[in-house]
Length: 112
Image (cartoon, rainbow, N blue to C red; front, side, top):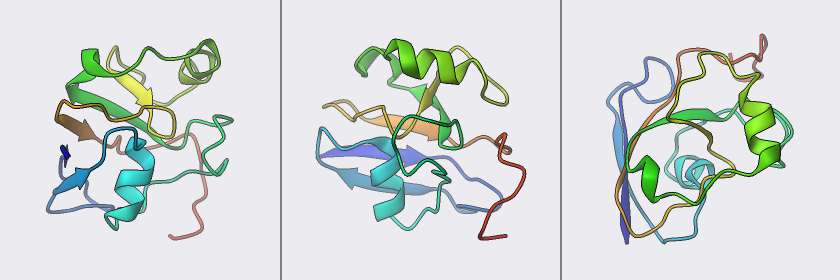
């Protein structure tokens, strides 16, 4: 099992979290399964940027992003060199530290 450490997020995960996941699981699926309601407006089909995350540790161990993901990331709020779409980034054998951005480009969320 691989650990995903989610850093504290004011709304979604105030205390932070440590999730144990099987390699091959997407970061988004792991967060949702762990009770962290990360946005995923396109239902994880790589068609939006609402599940954008920062991979603070372990970024280089992820499979390379696709051209489609890179094109979408260019539109993400707060893009950084360690940004990924959590619906596309699959966990490997190395632990990850993830930060969920404070904002997304989605101005309205059904849960707020």
